[in-house]
Length: 111
Image 1 (cartoon, rainbow, N blue to C red):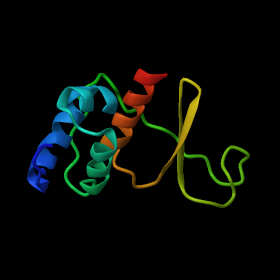
Image 2: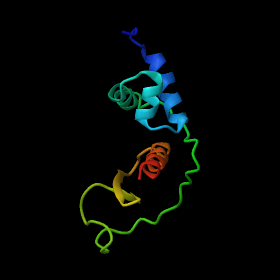
Image 3: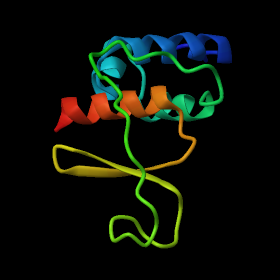
């Protein structure tokens, strides 16, 4: 059994994962880490500075459609829906752009 890792070690591991371009499963298999543990630490450390994705993902400007126009719900959370390869994800307003870019890149790799 390996020694427990401290918060500073997990910051380095999560940063290495985010820059790796690997899936959680592949990264964890190479490092001998449980995928659930990495996911938990990514969530736990979510308040730190985001790491810019290293992929070729480009963010594009979008036009938000007024509620009630037939294209957006009249009530409910504000945000947008991102669709990649048939998978749709609702992203709330204010979500970190680096996180969205990493999410889109990962969906593109998996789908």
